[in-house]
Each structure stands twice: as C-alpha cells, then as structure tokens.
Image (tube, rainbow, N blue to C red; front, side, top):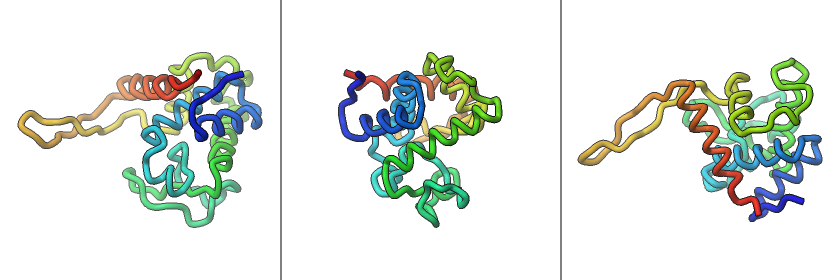
Length: 167
C-alpha cells in the first residue's frame, strides 16, 4: 500500500483511488496538487480547499456556490467544502476527458508524469505557455515567457517533485 506523509497527500490519494483512478495516476494527482498549491501552502488551498487550482464552474456539483477569490489569471478560483470534493472534481474532469476520447480508455496507460502533464496541457487544464518572474541582476524581477514545451517540462518536474514524499 502506498503511504504519503501528511494528511492532504494521503487524502487526495485515497479519494482518487476510491473514485476509480489507478494508484499510479492517483500518485500523479498528489504531485499535481502539491505543485499547483505550492506544497499545500497557497491561500486558495488553505482557505478554500482548492487543491488543483480549478476555476469556478457554476454548474459543478462539487463546488461551493460563488467560488473563492480571483486568481492570477483573472478568473475566480473554485471553493470546496472539503478536500474530498476538490478531488472528486478532478477525477470527474478526468472521466469526462476519457468519455470525450481525450484521455485513454485505460487510465493505466498514463504511466509517466510527463504523459499526465501532457494530457492535462492538451486538454486545457493549464496553459501551454506561461509567464514567470525571473530575478534581475541588481534586484527586482523581469517577466519571462515559457514555451509550451518548457511549461510541459516545468509541470512534469512539479508533479515528480510533489510525488517525492512517497514512503
């Protein structure tokens, strides 16, 4: 049995598996969540149980009506009553992509973090490009734009790093 340090990682893993996700995909989801939330430290996660940076969807059965605050992309973040609801939202999203033929019928085919990150990217879960702050010599910051390939690599590494607390 897989064991994660910390309640959040363990709960995400357990709920994802209960929702029918294979164990390896559930581990990727833990890594994704840790990456998206800055190791469960961002306010959207701590205050609104938004463990996957999902945006407000007024038709969602899992979200609290009205959502949370505005994210850096200008859209309101989803708000959930529980961590379980946030995980249910993500597994429901994956199942809809499966039904649409955008995710494999057999989720066991998602056998690397890069495959998972690529599927998320091509299905629009996160942007193909990304603007990030980079420190300037002498202080301050500049903006750098990452290509879709660079952002895929960044997201993949984030998932892998987030999975590192597997014991």
